[in-house]
Amino acid sequence: MMRRKMVVGNWKMHGNVVSNKVLLDGVIAGVRDLHNADYVVCVPYPYLGQAQSLLQGTNIAWGAQNLCSTKDGALTGAVAPYMLLDYGCSHVIIGHSERRSQFHETDDTAAARFNAALEVGLTPVFCMGESLEERDSDWTDFIVGRQLDSIMRRYGVDVLTKAVLAYEPLWAVGSGNPATPEQAQEVHAFIRKRIARCDPKVAAEVRILYGGSVKPSNAAQLFAMPDIDGGLIGGASLTAEEFVPICRAAN
Ligand code: PEP
Image (tube, rainbow, N blue to C red; front, side, top):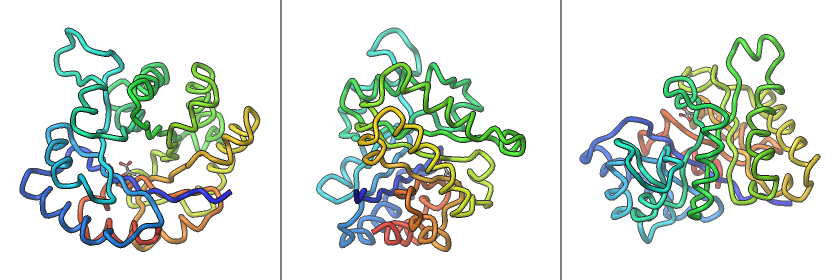
């Protein structure tokens, strides 16, 4: 089956109203004629309105980088899933390694957020990945399998058809040291096989993005691997000069 490629930009905690406009204008112009893949930018909460007003009517979707798993209530500083809908979001990143390592995100809390996103019709971009120590100890399959199972055990396998998965080895995220296409492919194939044990059709359909130091210079080789369906892009999503060629590689 041919899966449509996807590129998701993760701005993390970067940007301001002026620089966002320059960036988004550049990305809009650069991907306008690229119709063979899907493009998403996940921006900080305060800029969702700006993303909405600049991106609506274009071929670029937008989303957030996290959400609260509670519907609404007395939770100072939290953002409820329906609030993202008010700003036209279609996607939300869930379980990013920076949330797991710096904000006490666990398999349990990530799974709850995953489900909360689905309940309001948002597409979760669910991140999984091992640390360097875990890789060096041959624990990659165990860690990534555990993170994947944290969703499938609670919510079944079918929910994956409404999600996007992202393999993001921690040692590659923001390090300038990407996984080789072969290293990434090996883990993507492992993820797909594990899903196939539950449902081969879901496994064949679900998009699995690679994230970790993707640049214009390595995107095409990574995206050419059979189980890599595009990229989750951090640093290189912050300029149109880098992000657009990555989108073109997916196209
Ligand atoms: C990310 O933040 O998800 C990421 C992959 O970052 P970078 O591309 O900078 O490694």
